[in-house]
Image (cartoon, rainbow, N blue to C red; front, side):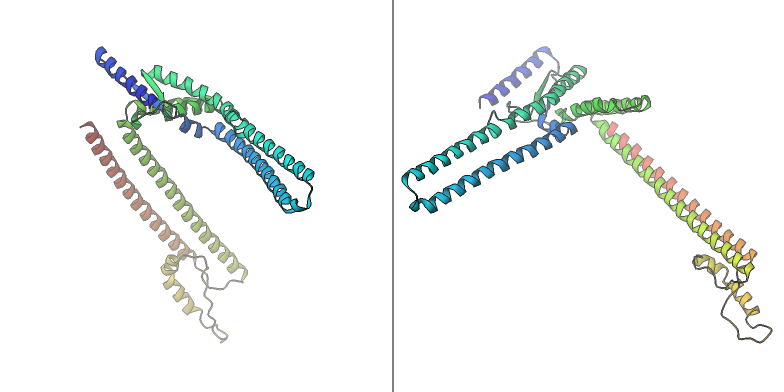
Length: 345
């Protein structure tokens, strides 16, 4: 309660000071626990410390189990033991219990290894956080910056005054800068400039989000178009290969007139009449042999017709796709303009 009253008293002093000086007092806060949990080095070291603590717990449990076994054994054999042996075993049990409690206090006590190592683990990150907070406060003219996770109780905190993510970005930038090239460093600085502008003007966040969504949609559209073109190219290559194999087989006399299995249904429809005519001419051999169901290979004219129809279909699909993309871009631009006008009003 005393800390709460101190916080309220401090807030009143800040309000009176700002009124007396006729200026706006800028107050921000951070959440140290949130920052620590989102720093990769701290998370990795904390995981190793938790593994070590788990090992200590297992050792404590093993000591407890051993003591319980000794107690059960003494309880079972007590009627058969002399008074001296009973006292000796009870002394041994008490010694082991005290040893277990000392070990538990050593590892998990308020000043134990676990607490000391946690503090040592967080200390370097906390120093970096304090430096980052000072830089942000000086650059953006903050009068006070509090720690939400500290002992000083915050009765209310508006999210827009939380600068924890800004601190995290500074910490991550410091780590990334060591691994960036000059070009990447320049791009990173431009990105940081945009992020700082968004922090100063929250209204820009919605606009930036809309731009990011538009960029993602455009990249997805390009990716889909590329996949579609690759599929068409593969289909064309398979069809051309099948026609070439059929032509080679016809030259060697091993061809069966059946259309290639990989030919598209549209191609089969386009050459159906030509196949029927060719089959009628070769249905019965001059020697009077029994007619076969085999069909001859496509002629060059039929191949050209097939390729022409395929090309025509691809051009029509591409034209339709371009029209759809233009319409979608037009609608997106209109929506962005309307949203910008709404924001300005």
